Image (cartoon, rainbow, N blue to C red; front, side, top):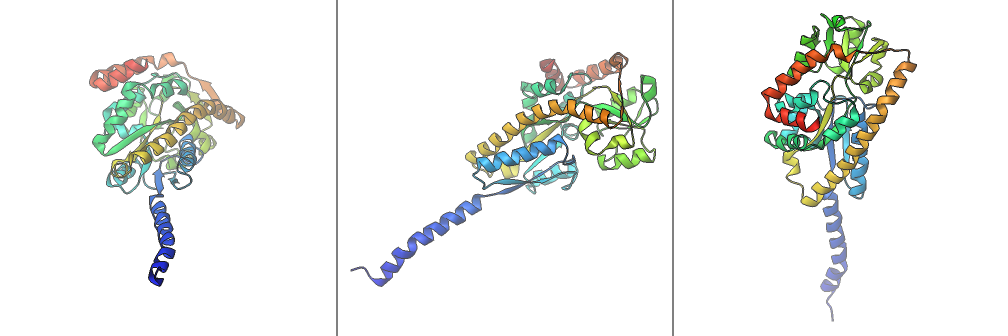
Length: 326
């Protein structure tokens, strides 16, 4: 005969096991923080949302992302510090900010290296581009892949039709050496300014123009202060999707693969979406009454070639990337 104690033990054993399983599953579920610097209307945010949807599906609803746009977790440098310490899990960082730590990312900004977003998307799969991601481990980051903003153009408060019109113009440019070299050699005054401060600066004439992609122009309605768009198409501008190495190394191989699978579909989706957005954004700006001018690329060619020659000669990794993607 089974004792009362044994009967009770047998009765509660399944409950204990089920509770333990529930706690185990709950412990393995995770909400990961992902930050970036662009507004919610931007393609980078949309890629993050797609990544989140995929992650939920891959994990059976257990894992998800908390997405923080517009530098809510800090700018790129602050987010890198958080990633390195394990204080956040994921981020979309500008290649421009990473180039201040890893010079080879300047290869993405060589003038006229790409004709359009589709060309830049293809370049993300080049061995040199993938090596850039792998080398981020030197900075305690795990490079997962890329997401692309649109090509760079110039929006301004007054018309720009020739190189001479850039002379002494205060142009908001990304704060890195190559951008500064490019605009300085064109005679402009490159000005570092947070993207959230650009529209007020245009209104008060602290800025004359902005080096920018069309997603940002549309999302922040910069055309209300600067109604002239000059299509220069001078550079690509990728975001780099990274994970904290501290966090990544604690994941099992199965969960790492789950995150990678979720992101890679979002990456490919984002490339396609941005190629289409280049057309729709331009049409939107025209409909809003923005004056659109095609710039004569030949006027920019001499400075572009000097920049290319200088940066490919100064860094073998940049040279390799340029040669592979040409």
